[in-house]
Length: 409
Image (cartoon, rainbow, N blue to C red; front, side, top):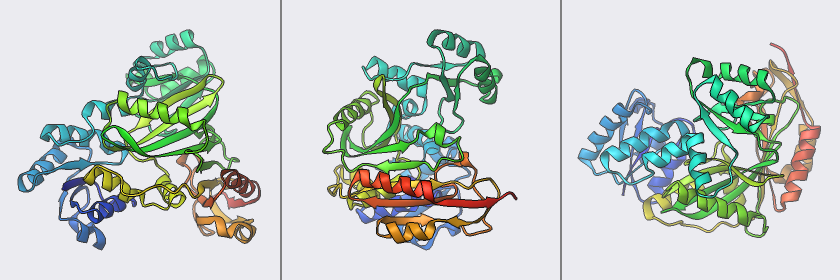
C-alpha cells in the first residue's frame, strides 16, 4: 500500500507516524514544507519520496504535489493528523478519489455549530449552540439561553481563543476580541456545568477498535486561565470494568456513525454533571499534549503502529493491556519570567520514582511558558500507577508540594 503523509517534520512526533507506516509494510511518501535536506536521517531512510510545498494548508500546492506523486505511483491513502492540515488533506483526497475521511466529515469535525446540529438531530445530547455572524446574533442567543455562555472560534482547538462570559458586558468584550464585530463568525454555546473528560478512539470503517478515556482536573478553561493550579490529565485503566463508561462508549460510537467517520483516529470531549452526559466536540485526529505517549505506557502498546496497522491492513495489530493508569501534571511558576529553581523535586523522585514515566524541568535561567500556552509549555511530570485512584492521589500530592520558582525578567 502506498500512503502519502502530510508534513513529517513538525511537530516532532510526526516522525512516529512515518516510522510506523514503514514498519507495517507501507510504501511511504510525504508532502511537507521543509527542504529534503532538512529531513532527519531516519525520515530520509523511511520515505520513498518527498515533495516540498510552500504550505501544507495551501490546497492548490498540495494537490499539485499529490497529482505528481499519483502519476508515478497510485496513492492508496493520504493521511494528516494535525488539526490545521485535516481539511486540505480531505479536499485533495476527494479531488483525486483517494479513500479516507470525506470533506463533509472533516468539515463537521472542525465547525462546531454545524457538528452539534447534526448530532442533536441524531439524538446525541449536546450543549445548546449557534454560529453567530454578528454581535446581535450572539446577544439574541444569550437572551434565549441565558448566561453563562462560551464563545470560541468555530474551528478552534482546545481552549484556544475560548472565553466564558457571565453577562452582557463580558459577551460584548469577548465578541470584539474574537472579531465578531468585524464580520467573523464564531461559535456561541451554553455553558455546561460538570466534570470535563475526553474519549479517544481508533476506528476502522466506522467501528471503534481501540478506545481510551481520560479526565481533566480541573476543566481546560479553568486550567488555562489560573496560574496557581497544577492541572492534571489522568488516563483511566477502568474503561473496560467501570459501568459508567458504557454510556460514553455508546455515545462515541454514535457520534462516529452520525459524522460518517471511517478509518481514523478521533478525539472527543464530553461533560458529566447535573444535566447528565453531554457531548462537547470531536476532532478526526489524535489528541494533543502527547497523550498517545500516556496510552502507550498504560496499555503496553505502540499506538502509532496501531494507527498505521488500521490504515494499511484494516484491522488492529495488538490488544490493549489496561495495565496502568497514567497521567500528566503541569507545574506552573509563581510568575512569568525566568526559572530560578524547584522545591520538592528531590522528595518527588525519592517517594514516587518508580512511578515516574518522564519529566521536563527546564533548567534555571530558562524562560517560563505562559499559563495559557498549555500543559506542556513549562515544567511537567508524567506518571503511571496500576490503580487509578493511586495515580490521582500521587499527582495531587505532587501538585500540592512541588513548586516552580521564578523571577520576573
